[in-house]
Length: 321
Image (cartoon, rainbow, N blue to C red; front, side):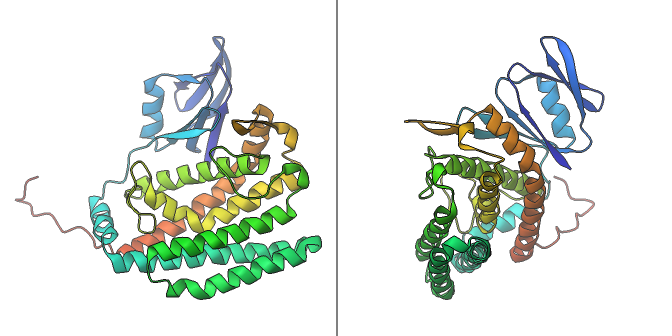
């Protein structure tokens, strides 16, 4: 399965049989079969009728609308999984403090472990920065020893924040000076690398939300990330251990000159990728997205086991709804 990225002003989408049709100025300019699609990303002034959304939903194809310069996502979901027992089990365990703490410790341990592995890999190739990366590794090693002793989720968040600060200090050490990257920042990002990280995290989060809905879970009810209005907390949980995949991807785009500073514009409102940059980004993103979807599926499968979901009871023939 693959994704379709539509980022072109004035394009109109239609359905013709089992294919999506592109029109510009009334002329048919291309077609894409729907069979291999799992996601459609829309950005810019793309026009389509509600029947197109209906056809995509029928085929289980999620639609993500990225609006504005900040690419804020709006998700239009395919039909969700119909096993409500999964969501009931999730709701019950979200109120179990012992479960939430155990889940959160494992999650943070996995996340910091991936950050450590990444720092170790960087040290093997970035020989000019072995000293800085060795300091990062020492910090992460110390944090790893303390995670399972954290008494509550608030303490875990503090130690996770310290690990992330060290992780991005390592990235800052090896990032090209022309990128002006000194630390992770957002809303808005202030340099090209942060702009790419923000977009990558947005797309990863959207994939997690779609995967959770498809699995019959509620993305808003998390265990490490607690309830917060408008936040898909369980999706935030799922992406934490695999964020480093986006970090590595973003850094490689610049190191390989796939993305360059001239693909970005910076003002007092932040740093934003231009059309040429987005074309280059999406061309590379899909290969990573396939791997991320598999990783999210594995995360969800593990979560299902933790939820200890039992099969639904057999319905009595005389029972009515």
